[in-house]
Length: 377
Ligand SMILES: Nc1nc2c(c(CN[C@H]3C=C[C@H](O)[C@@H]3O)cn2[C@@H]2O[C@H](COP(=O)(O)O)[C@@H](O)[C@H]2O)c(=O)[nH]1
Image (cartoon, rainbow, N blue to C red; front, side, top):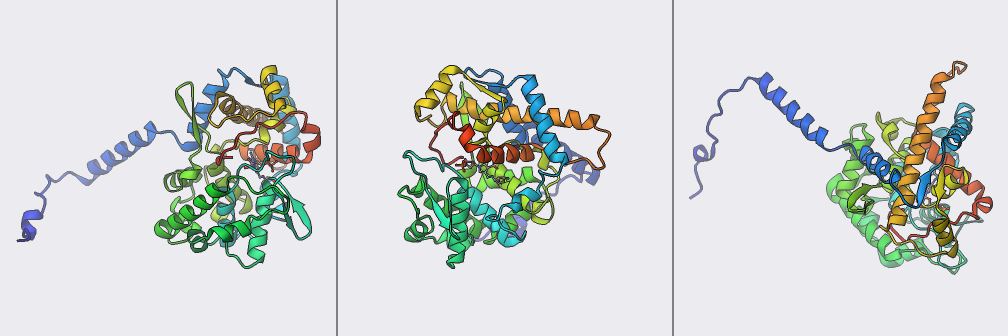
């Protein structure tokens, strides 16, 4: 017989004054949150530790950091670098709306591993232009949407057929896209989570974070495991979180800090540890590779994911950009001539170095990228 209602009712609690209960709740929450640093802080803390003890990679000297800080600050002051730079790329969404947010989510779910084992790259020709690297992915998504494949909708992602995705990611060179099966699995899984947990809408996911990019990062890490980019180094966990941080950065840049890109804590985001920016940092003297590491990269050996070499390159890159950001902010404080103070954060410095590396790719070729096959960057 079902227990009567009264027998299931909890015994009346001694009446605790509301204020005491509220204070206790706040204290409990603050002690809980104090114990776990915010995700971008976890990245910075773990990367600083590795960077300060790395064997093969070192942050550049103070003169290099100072020189880069002056150069980048000039670019920021001249307005050559701002959030507007993101939509200036014609392949990126030009209208900051829900569709752009969906585009960015798929883009950064797939934003990894465009380097090739052979001498040709995965290539997508779009509107008469052949794109490789990161831009081949952006071109492929645009091409799919032009062909009426609503690849950025949660439902289409959740129900994606292998042959549809093979069509979407078809190459216009003889080199196919890398890690196709992992991409297929990631798209289906992400689409199903968007449908089940977020009502099929990336907007719901973003709104649940209530204007905090750190909360959005935690939500994405919790529900979309392929963003959970971490390693271990000499027995300790190292957080890198490259694609989940560039996801919030791309939203912030595309929406120019407003609407779906409005994050009050965006300055906490670190550099995104990929394989292109480290190459740019070495060229700018902000990262030093040991002779043995340079020789290893010139041979073209694969660098295993999670290896000490890979982790040292990625973490020291993040720490180098953090030091440049701090130096720029110091210089900015001394500038009394500026009508308005430009925004400075690791995101804009990262975008600057990435675009610089792409624009000077031939010059930078003498510093090989590190070739790690991974879904994380
Ligand atoms: N740290 C960092 N990594 C970035 C980007 C971007 C896209 N940047 C554009 C968006 C806004 C900026 O203004 C740029 O115009 C892609 N990647 C990573 O690079 C690699 C691809 O390299 P390649 O094969 O040579 O195209 C791959 O790991 C990819 O995940 C970035 O900005 N920062």
